[in-house]
Length: 189
View 1 (cartoon, helix red, strand yellow):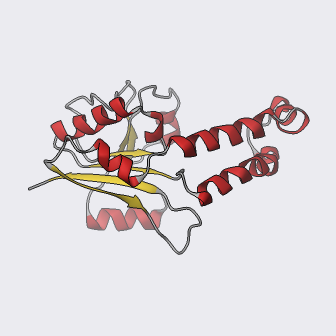
View 2: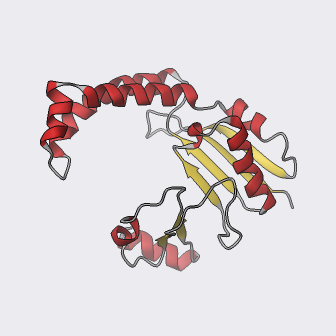
């Protein structure tokens, strides 16, 4: 986090971010360093059954499409039971722009591979000689677009939780080619 943002955050509110994962990384906490605004837990956290000691607004970025409907409802239900705010966003979507972007991903793989660190000969082999990596990137992107729910489908997942206000849609920006899909929920007062 840049010093400018850190100063702006400390002036307004003590916003802290805690990273959790069902399969946590052993090296993530070392990579984060001693940032007072950013931390991670070193134990597995199931988004459908978050421990009560982990309180706060819940976010899921670019992975909600991996959850089948039953698990997605369980994740939403756990946030509702804990009376925690919830937000998810996906840069993939079932829109022509998202699919067109995915078609460009192999080109990005070809262009960025030489700059990736640490250097590995196997990466060069699997990118240029036998183009497995660009094909896998393309396949993963197309499948992710197909699996990403529309705003209407996201709202359908929330029908069992009328005690929350839910909003879903496509985020529009003049500065972005893509329109990420989002779902936001908060308890009604």
